[in-house]
Length: 161
Image 1 (cartoon, rainbow, N blue to C red):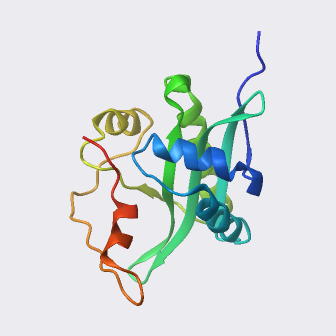
Image 2: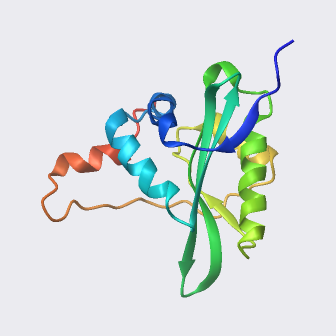
């Protein structure tokens, strides 16, 4: 019998696995770029990045950050959540979300928010099962600025059908 999946804070050495798991969401980040971004995230107090691990192998991750708008109290935003296809439906995603909810409470936030592409219907059902409600539908707008070319926007659009 194998040890249960554990959840821990991400480490810079997880960058390759995080990039690989991101591929399962339809994103294609370069592992070196993930390493740089992850190092910045890990240095911040208003963000948390956790990894679910099975016998030393990362099998899921969640990235959370504190958002604050003038019209609402501070809240936690789930920047990303993925569980390896081979490990889905084993409670790992539920455990990762529970960690984000605990982190929210620890930081004085009473709401956790996330967004999910309209095509991810299985994810939508999962979020409903664990108590999340659809608040609204909306469009997502972005614009490349500065020295970025229009291709920079592609990183925000997953390959999903």
